[in-house]
Length: 228
Image 1 (cartoon, rainbow, N blue to C red):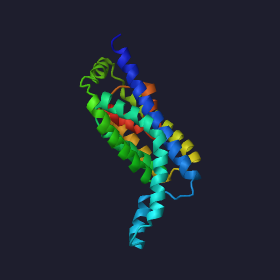
Image 2 (cartoon, helix red, strand yellow):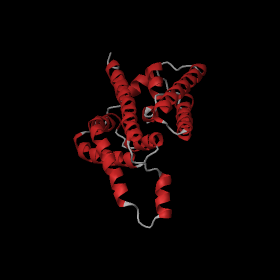
Image 3 (cartoon, helix red, strand yellow):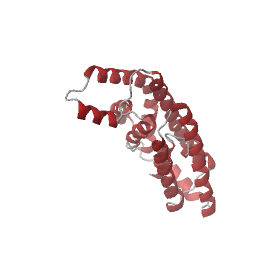
Image 4 (cartoon, helix red, strand yellow):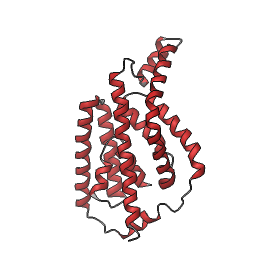
């Protein structure tokens, strides 16, 4: 009975992160689609540097202010995410990976950079109030007590995961015009991490957690988070 609560709570943590990724994608991509301002990608920055001695300050200022307006509604959700990361997983790298994954999906770097800045500020403000060195002990015991699945079962889980990721990415691409290269990178990277997780690390997980691992864009975040 003691293991039930940590397991359910762990599922809740992962589900929240996955939901946060979907909400962030919706807010950023929807605003990008209806905005008259162009997105700022790495290519456009290189173009600025090559063609202009001085960057168009007013345009860049508009992009940054537009990004700040979009970041503000996400801050309450990010506070919860930062608390989960610091309390449950105690590894801040996930708060760096999330904006990178988001940048891959929205083809824009200004908003993810602002999100990264928000995460850094929140970590600074909240980290001094949280400390939980034994937070993963219940999960460790649970894994030790689980029966090891056969390799064929794990192969089936990998196929299942890739199928869900592909279907979800196809749906998201229909609504949000996600670049094809980003789709390929995401499927390849999440599949490789899942193979390492299931076959090499020989970890065990339920269909529910594998499903959470498979939902873009932050499914790969919870997958990596469960590896450490």
